[in-house]
Image (cartoon, rainbow, N blue to C red; front, side):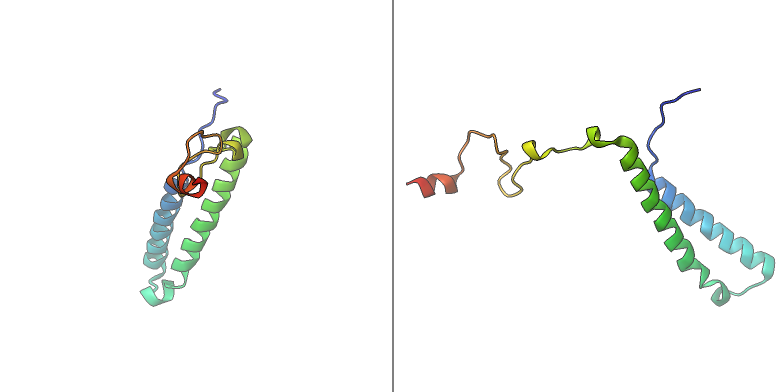
Amino acid sequence: MNTNSRPVSIAHLVFGLIFLGAAVLWAVGAATGAEAPDLALMAPIILIGAGVIGLVAMVVNARRRGPEHVDATPEMATDATTGITPDSPTTTTVQKENQS
């Protein structure tokens, strides 16, 4: 048995649930003879349910990965405006103008 598990593709999961919900809506409508307005209330419920399941899957994947898979650590974070890391020896044009 393979113990290595891949993380769940959340987009695939959510869209699969949406299409499954659409199929269930169609099947219920065909089996009961219900009109579209009667089934209109179920569509938002299916979308909200798929979104909630997607959020739960995202949290579960994040917890399984653990802290070792975090993309950026605070020590290596870059300034969003300049793209320079705190350890960078370069000076920016603004810093040069302020020094003179």
